[in-house]
Length: 94
Image (cartoon, rainbow, N blue to C red):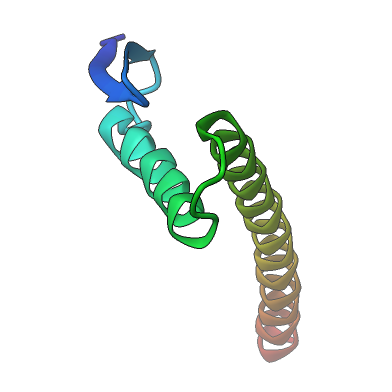
């Protein structure tokens, strides 16, 4: 398995992020988090950097929970539609 790594500067600190999952685009993760921090910088001018990061992390968590809920709903829809389709196919074959 190939490890992907990227070095990036975040609030004046250099970090190195590694991912062993080929489906994870490390650069995309960094860009997403940086965008969330920039949102906080824009809407909360003058807020201490560590507080902006905390708010950004909470927003990332909110986005994650929302995505999980949407995925669950999508799975339920797929299962429901698949079941109806199978029932229609079964009744057409009888």
